Length: 286
Image (cartoon, rainbow, N blue to C red; front, side):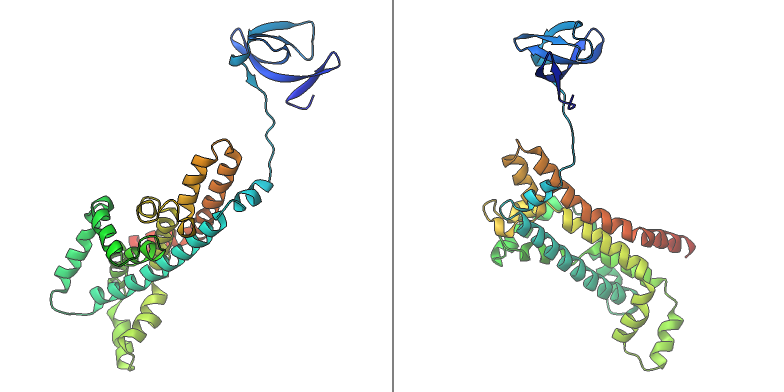
């Protein structure tokens, strides 16, 4: 027996899981008709009859590492992976920069209408993305960014949530540190990058992880701004969607592609998990 076939009376027969009464039994098919004749491979004298269509062919599941190289060999799938990495890196780096700068401005710099501007900026969090999708798409078309990776990066570099998160963390840093740096002649930018940023790693890591997961798994927006035929600008989510439609008869490739897309975010989340704990703990102490 190989797990899927068995030798009965010198002939190799396929194995099926056959419903017999209230249980499923593992039997060999010896006559393939509408109502098939099955026998017990261990006791050939024990036989039964069942509709072949209702029986389930036994399968042997094995790990095939070649599935990953095969799915990477599919047309432009490797390009989609590269595009996803590039988009994610630029979104994370850009959003961290704007959030740190904006958070520091709202937390430490006094200017007319600061609090009102902050409340208005923060209110944009409450607007669902689907409401902004059409106006945002029109802006992208006006700038001639559709069908390009720029349309996947620039709209997400400015994030109200990131600015709010960094602002709240910067507010909690004692002013004595900032005043001492001013006395020593440090500029605001030097204070920000030499004092505030090193003290804010838990918040920065949390924001970076959120932005990474959002950019890596983004699907609706790329589906809107990138044409299906423009595979050179596809990201992983679009490539997997097309693979799921065209490769419906090859589920092993679909699962291999999904595993590749899932592994990187999983590793990033596990590595950044301790920063989440630190962020929650420090928030509870303040």
